[in-house]
Image (cartoon, rainbow, N blue to C red):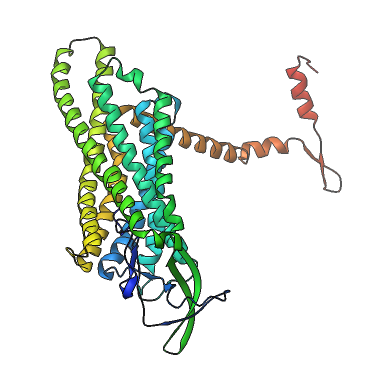
Length: 429
C-alpha cells in the first residue's frame, strides 16, 4: 500500500515534524501541560497526534463512499474464493496460493478500510488532535494492512515462479511443487512479513496528554519515538528502506515481469499445440485446455498486480530520495492526491481476482454454483419443512384424536394412532 507507509521515518528536530505511516506528527502552537496519570514533564517529547491533511474533496468521496462499497464486495467475493479453493476436489498447488492470496487481501482491505472510513471519511476536521487510544488503533491497523499487503506481494510472486516452473518443466516441475511445499511457502510468506514489520509496533510510544489552546484544556493522544529507535533511527531507516526497496518492491516486480513474459510466450506456443491435439481424445485435450486456462489466469493476476505495484515502486523510490536528501520532488498536495488514487486502484485490484477466477476457471464456476445451489436447496427445504409442520392437513390429523366431553371440554385420546401402529405391526385389530 502506498499510504505514507513508504515514508516511515523523518526528523523531528527543530520542529520539522515526523512522518510515520501516513501520520504526521508536527509541532503545534499548543502547550502540553502533563501526561495523564504520570509525573513526567515531556513538553519537548510527546506531540499531539495529527492526521495527514488529505484534500477533503477527494478523500471523502473515495474513503467515505467508494471504499466501503468495494470493501464489502471484496470481502464477500474473497470469502467465496477461499471456500471454493479449500474444497477437497479444488485443492492443488496453485489454488493453495490463490486461497492464501485471497486471505491476505481480505485482511489488508478490512483493516485499511475501517481505519480510513472513520478517520478520513467520517472525521471532518483533520487539524483536531486524535483522542487516545484511537491513535493506537489508527497506526496499528495501518501497520497490519501494510504487512498483509507485503504478504500478497510475496504470494503473487511465488505463484508466478511456481507456475513458470510447472509450465517450462512439465515433467519434474509438478513433483517439485507438492501440496506440502505450497502450504509451507504460503505460511512462510505470512511469517516473514510479520517478522519484518513487527518492529513498527514498538517504534512509537502513545499516552494521553493534556493540552492547552486558547485557554481551553483538553486531553488528546500524544506520541513520541521510542528511545531505542530514536538513538538508531538513521540505521534502522536505512535497513527498512533497503529491505522494502529490494524484497517488497524491486525483486518481486522483476520476478513477476520475467515470469509473465515466459508464461505469455508459453501460452502463445500452446495455441499451436492445441491445434495439433484438436483431433486427440477428449481426456488429454480437456486436461491441456485446463492447464492453459490456469496459466492464463495466473498471467492476468500478475499483470494487474504489476500495473499497481510498478507505480507504487516508483513513488516509493521518490519518497526515499526525498527523505534521504531533503530535496522535494513532489509537493504535499500532489503527494496526498496520488496516495489516495493509488490506494483506491490497489483496492480495485483486490476485487478483480474474483472475476478472473469466474471468467477463466470452469471448475471454479461449477464448484461455486454447486456450493450456492446447495445452500439455497437446504434453506428452501428447511422452510418447506417448517411450513408443512403447520399445514391444515397436519392440523386435521392432530384433531382426529380429539373428543369432546359432556361439558364441552376436550378429551384427547390416541385410539386411531394405536390402530395405525397395530396395522404396521401386522395386527388387524
